[in-house]
Length: 415
Image 1 (cartoon, helix red, strand yellow):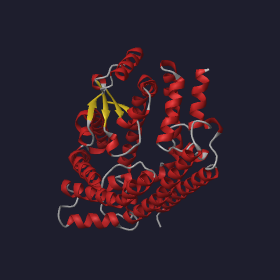
Image 2: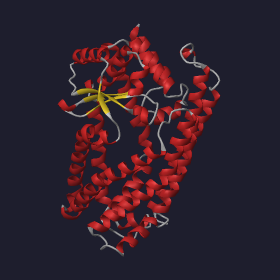
Image 3: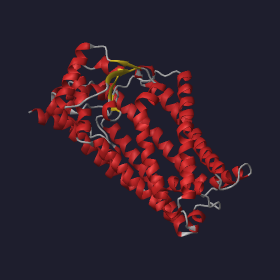
Image 4: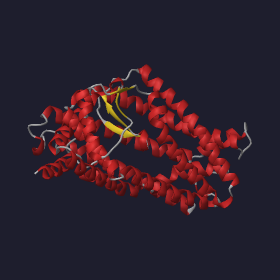
């Protein structure tokens, strides 16, 4: 057995077992604290609500454990099981092996198979777990319509991108990875730019905010923070889910603020302003650009590594692939790389939580910390977010700080 095969199997086993172990810890920790509301939330959240959040989080985590095992098995089937090689050979009966049509068909078939494997989990999550806890409002027809739109949008954006990448890999010589990286950066910036006006409206309706009192309060907050927005919109998220949220989207003068209609219906105006002040903190601290820079930097490193591996026979042989095509190299690399990158997850989560603390501090300076605390409590309650996550699981995965720690810092800022 090739040394890289052994390394791949060891990394996959470690990653899979670590994920399962962390998930099991998480479920056990939640169960151990299910019957008592944390002291800092006593009087704000009822025991019934706390138990609902515990059961909801545990149900999602258990489903995630099954997904983890399924993903590992699918990866083994695609690689050492010969699935990718079989797909490549099948398409070589239709298109010339190594050609652009062959590469696009091969990559598309891998994506479709992965989506079909993921479909039962999505259905169960939406129509069983979300429905059981009273969150799902999506009908089967709407679910299918979303799937169809996602597939068409994925094809419209993905096929030209794949063709461009394959063309660059074939024509740009040994430095192809640099040209592909520049294309990838441009593609991501393009998607971010067109998302508010061309992509998001395919799935939701966006209407200008009609509540004049709320609108005036938000405009005063924006002026205070020196932030200009193209508009304030309410999104009909209640068609799909009762979860609430808000976000900013777009670049430059095209930036817009979007409030979920569920958020508007549940939070008081000052609480909504506090939530938006938190989001403004991300823009003020340049968190979006910092995260994009991190993403682009990591992608540059990964593509450079792929530029080396693509010419190594052992890379294909160790993963049971005989076809040495650019499409095969792309798929193999981006399937296998996450297995080896798992140990980066805690660092990325820590980086994200640091940004959340900074945004909270900004919100406390430009709005009332007490309003943000009250808004967070309502959001934790309405979204059934557990108040007692396992500390190690939270440290590895959570992009947001634990509720108790986050609120404690805000209360300290208020005092």
